[in-house]
Amino acid sequence: MLKVLNIKKTFSRGLFFRSKVRAVDDVSLSVEKGETLGLVGESGCGKSTLARVILNLLPPDSGSIILDNRDITRLRATDLKNIRRKLQIISQQPFSAFNPLIRIEKSLLEPLVIHGLLNRENRERMYDYLNRVGLHQGILARYPHEASGGELQRLALARALLLSPDILILDEPTSMLDVSMQATILSLLKQVRDEFGMSFVFISHDLDVINFMSNRIAVMKQGRIVEQGRRDRILNAPEADYTKALLDHFHNFNKERSTGFRIGHDAV
Amino acid sequence: MPGITRGEDNDLISKTIRLDRVSVDFQSAGKTVRVVDDVRLTFKEKRITGIIGETGSGKSVLGLSLLQLLPGNARVTGHIHYRGDDVLSYGGSRLRRLRAKEIALVPQNPATSLNPIMAVRRQIREAVASRGKIEKPGITQRINTLFNDLHLDGLASPGAFYPFELSGGMKQRVLTAMGICRDPAWILADEPTKGLDACLRSEVCALLERHYASSGPGMIIVTHDLSLARRLCCNIVVMYCGQVIETAPAPTFFSGPAHPYSAAFLKSSPREGFVPIPGEVPSVLDPPGGCRFHPRCRRKLKICRDLPPSLLGIGPGQAVRCHRYA
Image 1 (tube, chains in turn yellow, cyan):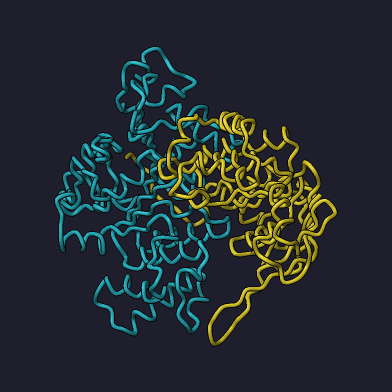
Image 2 (cartoon, rainbow over the protein chains, first blue to last red):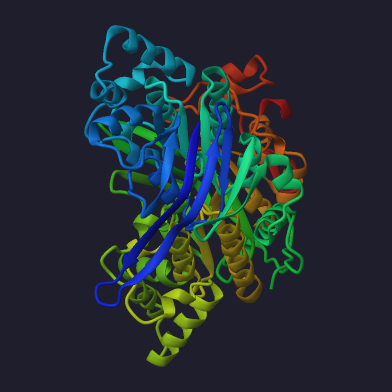
């Protein structure tokens, strides 16, 4: 369904002494219908850059993105607009995903306006989706600053669903949220995925979250995919050294306490 | 050294922080909203206390009230006793000294806590220098050691780096460094691992551990990261909707939390299978009557709807705000 072939993207910094950072280096991936690909890796490894390239928000230096057997990497603006309806993103920062100056209802309807889909039926669907994500209509009249991070993240999901996308790219959708809200959002995402038969590209640095959500996992390091495969294979029998290190790091942190670190315990 | 405790009567020498009926009210659109409600707590010196709770529970507001860092429309009442004084009465240079040398803040939100138009190195230098009595070469050396400890060696290379060139994790580590470099008696860390990946989280955590092991400051860690709390803290304070609903020694808490909310909160963590807590986080604008958790509580009694429970001691160092224990 979605194929990413040999994508490269380089950024440069500095005015006089230009240095180049290879953010995405020869990455190939594929996502089938109804499947969730978990993309895991440490901060700064190029996960989000890759997401932006897939969405055509950043032009790649080379390589191509194939959606339904069609190369969407170098499309004209009008064709791109049709593609964008099928590819939606939920970003890490719920607060920057909403225009602070307009009411939430307008923000939710804006994609429909842009794609010329604003009609009564779709308005009804908006109320319906709002219910589905566990929010009341009262929130529509509010401004983003009057909503919490968890509410905004659910609104972002409702907004993306309104366009009935085929693929949803989730860029660390819960890393800014509380554990309890994270649990709520993740169960909601699973429900929605199964019901609408959507494909997810789920980006996270949290292996527990990746494990909970994905069918397949790709591990990224410094712009490269070091390993990809079925979830259970990656988590139980990793081959790449980096994957092993990542798993170790993760399991160690969740152990009770590191050795050699003792603190006194007594009554408060 | 960890392990030594002093009596409460020794307030002048002891660096224990004692909160006495601390409430925080915000004035908003002509209405008064109570965000922190009647908190009585003791943060023992040289101990790591974790304040955990969901967004909007008032945990960060409580933390910031110690340093009078709340916005102008906030009003803090009650007393915060520290070294024989009420720090809420501090102002001017005493307040500045408190913030610089006694209780150092590691702020939340790395993206907005650094000055965007000032080189990172200069900002760290400012923090190091605020401690006073260090010569210039000493400062440079100290900064380089800090960079090393934090695996920020990249920043030590020539050329000025500005915050926008740093990743979120790097900014968080810079802020942590700025907090601990002054060797304060207390470190108040507001969500020090929010948004960090597993590797960076263990790095920041290890940094706090190392600093604790070498200098032994008291720490207050405001967080919703339960694995961090489990790893670092001696004592746990749980806040819900502006109130302290449970305090307990960490091992007791993690092996068997007393309050139904604490239990549900632990269950929602990844290790326990992401079980969501039913219902919505109540707004402090309009807190539910009776027990504030009763609309979401699976174990509620009749009385919970009508009567707000008070905080009851149920064991050594353990108190809970729940009718089930009355």
